[in-house]
Image (tube, rainbow over all chains, first blue to last red; front, side):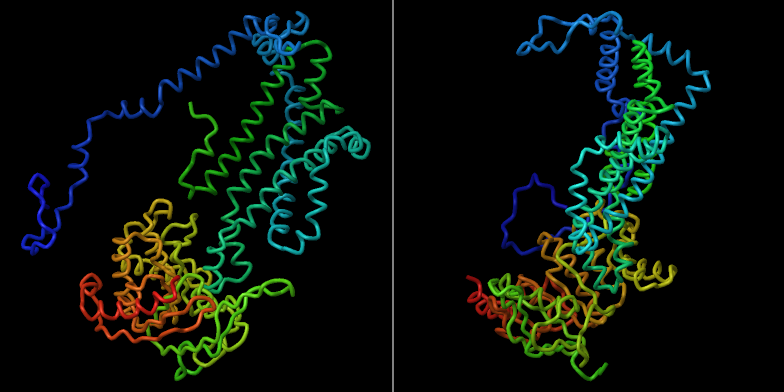
Length: 319
Length: 261
């Protein structure tokens, strides 16, 4: 190849020295051009120290503010239109991280605590699974068949617009205060969270992909299996992720309202006894359960959506 | 199927879009097209945008029925999508969840070709298009030109008898296009299948085709029908500077220019 420190030639010059193809440059030679860097320098760069320090500082700050009770003492100076966002909290209602940890370590060996955990997890899981299956089926059916969506669409939208929680007193009367009433509440909420994005995704499948398969002789079932289903899987998994969290919230809300057992029941009992350490302990345990659910779905997502170049969305925490 | 009849034949074909409701405008997309293409001919169709080029391909693919007239292949009427047609679009339209190899095998999967046969065929095609090192890459990891080559391999994997191509290289940059065109024309010259190639690029049409059809602005009609008498095999990057080629392109351009407002 010609080096560029010679002067350029005229465009109409006869091509007397057309350069040959340059020899390929080996991987070693290319590497040698890069600045040298040890594997530890690489890892250090990946960890990104400022980000990690920022995270640790934030956690320490929250811990300190809570622990030092500054948060409970309030800040009367701040007043927006007569409303104090940080009021002084009566000593009786105060809680501390130490107190919450005490509560957990006190109840952790107890069988009843684990029973409560299991009841809540079971309600959330069963409700989530039923809602997911029904939501995916309904979303697929309404998205695929124009007539079905014309018949059922307006009713689905109307029911979705109703606040499902308002039905809780009625659900309790019909299904009792046991686990069944929570499952029904969860299904009524989470169903729509899965159904709506599934239906929308079906109508957004790339028409070129469908057309290409059709010209290769694909039947409707093959179109569904080879094009529609993989194309909408990111939307479905996104819906499932959201529905899992909402399902836990539904279980807790139902249990706080009326139930025999469950973490929500334990939470409201602590609150009624002015044991706010217990309340925070429950919030902590519930957050752990939610992370567990999220982790399981993240596993599914990583497996089913291996093809997505952007894996960022499946990252939960990356310490 | 009558092998003596033309591979593709359109007789008085017109197509109207819309007009379901009396108040709606009915659009006449193509008007009384008559065209017969013998087996093994490479026909390019050029014309201003909106002249119904893609519509003709869709009718031949059996995706939309003609409003009047008849569309035939080897003498028999087309009633729906068939499996001996390869249709290729300007967008590669690859499945992002399939690797290059699996994309090439899509049609064979649909047709129920056994796995080892599929693998052998996709391997051969990827090799011919110099993509063998990228067989397990996903479309998002490949360049546009590579993806378009994967799409060519996918179109040819079922060994179709008729290749319908809708501006297949329109989305590529000039240099990539020349490379892909060269690979494509080598493939075609070795296979000799019937091709209908829609493009807005007159140079491309004359470089590749045996015959160039110029269409009028909407409603699309055939304005001229020209045999391109250039020898094969064609070496595209040389042919571009050939006097005979330039003359043919120039004459067709003067016809096409009147249709582009």
